[in-house]
Amino acid sequence: MGRPTLTRIVRDLPALVPFVGPEAQERARGRPFVLRLGANENVFGPSPKAIGAMIEAAPQNWMYSDPENHDLREAIAAHHRVPADCVVVGEGIDGLLGLAVKVAADPGTVVVTSDGAYPTFNFHVAAQGARLVKVPYCDDREDLDALLDAARRREARVLYVSNPDNPMGSWWPAADLERLIAALPDGVLLLLDEAYCDTAPPDAVPAIDISNPQVLRLRTFSKAYGLAGARIGYAVGSPDLICQFDKVRNHYGINRVGQIGALAAMQDQPYLVEVVRHIVNARERIADIARSSGLVPLPSGANFVTIDCGADGAFAKAVLDALLERDVFARKPGVAPLDRCIRVSCGRDEDLGIFGRILPEALDAARNRVASA
Image (cartoon, rainbow, N blue to C red):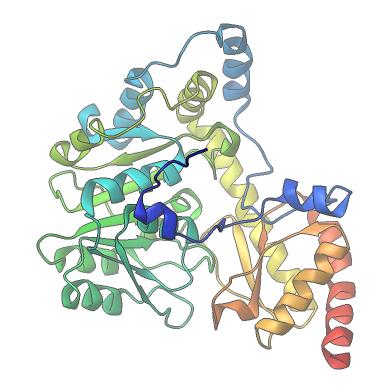
């Protein structure tokens, strides 16, 4: 029996996944988590209008989605005051990142990112056969000057920046990003991942400029809009850039119910304002819980708070393991020095009440474990 010939790029890739999902962990543990605070999901949920629209649409799920995403694109365009041909819809930001790398980076060319930033992006770069150049964080923020310098020196095709960023929740003011954009060398595409822009301070989000073909703004319905399971994201850019996505995107990749739900969510901005208020309050409460246990919460513009555990990555891992043992699903950064922290998603009052009781126990268990190691 013969074997298929795989591409060299895929054959040489390690068999890794960027995240082990909570469902896989629950299967391995043999029991569910009590708290699901690790995936930066919005536990406050989507707009009731979005839920109603999706319920109404469910019986018609025998139909494919509109491959042009016409109504959703029109609504997104109206919201951002841009033409509809400046918007592309995709399977979450993840799917659009993969397409953007395919559009802009030939195999062997350089893509610049931050060391410790969103790891799924790195997988898209690897699958394209491009070369990833990583720049260290500086003071728990992506180092814009160093990123720009690396893009220049290495003649990069793509520069990836997230604002606010994951996993630290830190952000740069819009003025700093605008300076970065103005200084981009010719030939570079800036992927500005704004998954958390709806929960960020207003001065962290630059105005959208569709006249600049070197900038692609990536947004999602997974975070503040509460539709992570629907897998709907979008990108805004110049028409000449956006039209390239029609050459490579999966035209029927969007599920119809999610498409309809995202449209209803976009049209219910008052609900979004209410949810963001809940998220801001939850960030403050997580910070209070951390401080009451002697830990340091980092400022966050996202729907999570990163907590400095005050030691090294080994101790933070012990804290995370102790939380998991107590049925709290959380995560932590994977790259030093960021890995001294754990990351906790925003939750409801009742969720954070439980977290506040469990965290001191987990810290005691972690200290005992490290001391006996």
